[in-house]
Image: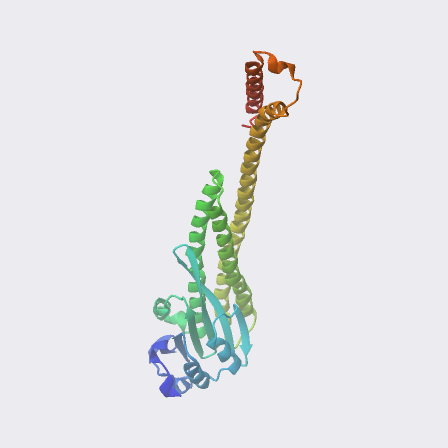
Length: 329
């Protein structure tokens, strides 16, 4: 099995003793390193295949159901307990142009280890690791602090995504209130609504995850680390309120867009009805004379033609004037 492991999937595997790095660790030596006192292992993987995850399961004594979930992307954000370890899933988000790209980060957390498996889009954790290594006192608290650092990084990356969505909304809102309703504007509003819902689905479960980490799993999350997850929960709540406000404004903009479109259609109908009324006058008169009655005395009068034409023109102009004053034309 070891011959099938692709080392390119292993981003970094480092052992920390009392918050200080004691060097890189090979996958085969993990179980031996975990026997050292005051030591934990932080392993980062990307797009890990089943062979590598099977070896990880062996070294860390992980549950097979958690490994099965880690093999497959498209997991919902969640936290699950398997014996003496936790399995967690968080969604990552990134703004690529006008589109939001989502990825997943899976966590295996124990009292002596932290394993991350990234799927899809996800920023490198190298800066997070370097920042943690610069704070050995906090890192000495164990893998719980490393977990906090990564979760905080993921949550912080939601903010520029929301800023980008807000910029998109401002452009669409300007188009709506400039009385330029169009199919393209409505499609943009619906796409924005979809991205907001997907982002909300990714963010909202993080609050429940943080609450569970603060209240339970004392053997894995020390008491002095739980306060950090409260900070993440507060941050997520602020982001969630921002998304809620944007959704309300988006709904209002969609309603205004539909209202403007209805008003525009009503204006078109009024104009068509007005011109139809004007054309009804000559239509009625000319159809009258087209009925070929045998006895029509006015046909013998030399002024009948100009009088009829003038009368039709005068009546049409009078109706046009009235409709114009009523703002129907």
